[in-house]
Length: 248
Image (cartoon, rainbow, N blue to C red):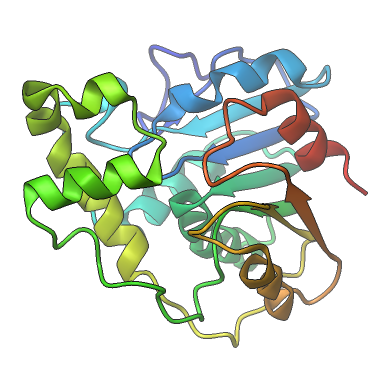
């Protein structure tokens, strides 16, 4: 059983473990995010469903660990942690950077014949599209901070706190490097149902671009547009859980 404080893998956090869950939801965070960004989702889960949240190094309870820029290392660790659990039908949700991690993780689970209910990509362009802008992770500290302010999603008091930013910058840069260098060919196909979520006002991942995940779907595909910008994971918790779990 996985708990919030301890468990068989440091890579997974479970806020409310379920004995012999009927289904599971795995949540993968955006750049700079930790498992805690999904805490509010717990209240809206149906009975019998267990939520697991990826906890990457360099944040929250793993803040003293070195952040990782190699998506393969992250995917391998998450795959091992999931396969160590008693199998249950799994929905994978990835927001922004989390959708990139999810891309490779779901393909690995698919290859292992794991029971996948659906893959939900949120606020992320498919990885075969060229980048919209030059890399953020290569910017000097102050321009990097200004870009974080422009994007939103990081608390203003954190951005204004020099010592806090000094602590968090290595992790943020590592996440941005992972996200901004992630690219994959359009030749792969997801055999589980694929749901794409897009913010109507998101300038980082335009809905028409997010809709192109359909090109990677071997079967069922849906695009849902939400009246929001790029960061809506915590603010729209109830609506998102309904979209992720109940959308036909």
